[in-house]
Image: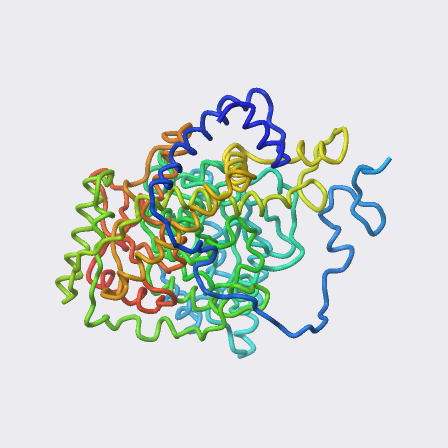
Amino acid sequence: MSPEDVRWVAHLARLELHDDELPAMTRHLTSIIDYVNQLQKVNTEGIEPLAHALDVHSVFRDDVPSPSLSVDAALANAPARNGDFYAVPAVLE
Amino acid sequence: MDATVRDLLDSQARGASNAEAITASYLDKIRQTDGRIRAFLHVNEENARRQAGAVDAKRKKGEKVGALAGVPVAIKDVLCIAGQPATCGSKILQNFVPPYDAHVITRLKEADAVLIGKTNLDEFAMGSSTENSAYQITRNPWDVERIPGGSSGGSAAAVAAGQTPLALGTDTGGSVRQPAGLCGVVGMKPTYGRVSRFGLIAYGSSLDQIGPVGRCVEDVARLLQVIAGHDPRDSTCIAKPVPPYTQALDESVRPLTIGVPREYFADGLDAEVKAAVQQALKVYEEQGATLKDVTLPHTAYAVAAYYLVATAEASSNLARYDGVHFGHRAATFDNLIDMVSKSRGEGFGKEVKRRIMLGTYALSSGYIDAYYLKALKVRRLIKNDFDEAFKSCDVVMGPTSPTAAFKIGEKADDPLAMYLSDIYTISANLAGIPGISIPCGFTKTNLPIGLQILGGHFEEEKLLRVARMHEKVTEWHRRRPG
């Protein structure tokens, strides 16, 4: 991985990395990726990916309304609040 | 501070003690020792005393009390308790106060347990030493120059130091079993789906499972009994009856065939650890168990598969820390995207950033097939290995970790070396099977060694009974750090 690759992935992850973090991040990610590349040696021809260890799919429940958090409880941890809403910088001019 | 859960319950029932006195004695112990051990991030004394007082009032009125009445339980700070901080060991959640209880907390409150405090961990449960906490480094009570393991290092150290009889941890790649092993206590990862993850702040959702830590097998069984069972709020939590774990605990499993995977005794295993585990296997043989050489051929790939699956899930789970809904928001920024990136850059520590980066990379366009999907295929092969082994064995046994506790700072700049300390525990999370670590010996320098016992899906009862067979005839679990 090049420092440019690391910058690109950081952009995808919306994660600000400072210049002084870049060399160690590049070095560590390169060594980890070298290590995980050994998976390419495993023959997985015809093997289904296993996303979940238990075969449970589509669990349904009755659609019954139940109490949810109050607006105040939901907003109690918000870094910024505007009335009954989360406040964020404007995204439209 | 040497009391078992049963002792604590009996002494209250007899009237020899009460919940307030028990809670006060553990709070004293925390006050005396935690300056050195640093297992706790928050201790809410007033709250603990109030809960204890309520239990005593119930008893006085002759009301029925719960299964853990007046018994202190420490909680890893990745589980939500309404109205108390939940930091996940991260600066990004420094001021976060959850508005609801995790399912396991609801269960503990119903059982009249006393929630004594929140324990330290690697940030977002990412680590094997508890050194990745943004707040403090927890010390191993057996040698304060050494790590307690991780990520549930605070929970294991607190139990080992006698600061609490019980604790909850979480285990995504060994984070209950490994610190339990390194601190000389008992720790269990239940089957994926046995315990609801509702209110557990997510790391790797297909791997995360909450598990009990205690000083003996029975204590762990009692805590598991309270937290296990169906919860509709976690759709991966299975609606399967919970057996009475303590009822037949003292009955040996007979016949018992123990699978001994040759891959767990290969290169990289410390000689003293190997000798202690082999001695433990002999203890089982002496009780009539049959040892069977088995192979788990994809063991060598487990760490690689895990670090792709877990980090891919983490990169997605941790996207919620965006400086909008809760958690840290940067003070200055140019626009919305900049606010999100800066807030995350400031709030997350090194290891969390590394894992988000690796997971994002593994899921990114052009790499998802080669990394994420490849890892999921290898994951199936690892699960198939266990399925095959359990066709002829009741349980599989080996060391919990390749070495005893290492020195603080020893692996700080080598993440890969740190990852490899989970080599024996990680497969169970990928396969979703339960596992337990019990003390099985000490190194010459008096550091605990853990024996890991793995079982088939939902075979916790058998695992506990098998673990108890060793405990009944050995004294390792009675040793205490100085």
